Image (cartoon, rainbow, N blue to C red; front, top):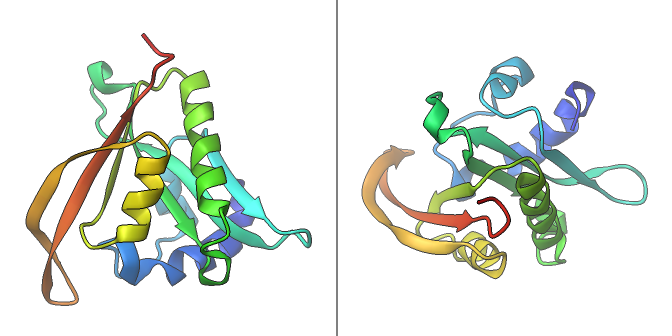
Length: 155
């Protein structure tokens, strides 16, 4: 993913705002860029180059002891869901995270987002717990599921 990909990535992001994030609007690229690692960042495209999905990692803390602990972001365009693109993308993100020395990837999603939970579990994430009534989205208290994947390659 490059800065010039942002308009297409932002469109996919916007389609997922009500499914799995407390964000109300899509941030601008500079704001988003400041909160995510520079690699890995991946965009899945169709044969015409249209962005179908994207995935990236953000640090969970600036403390040195947590340098290998990240949180994932993965969004799939509505028209592309259910075709295995999300799984392929998350598997590749995990592979690249292992190569980068990242030992833990955390995932937070709305607790009732069964598709995201199933995707993460299929890619080796385990449920850590449910955080009840964590924050409000559109005035409604939402609970989140916390999942994590520990790298088998990073000691």
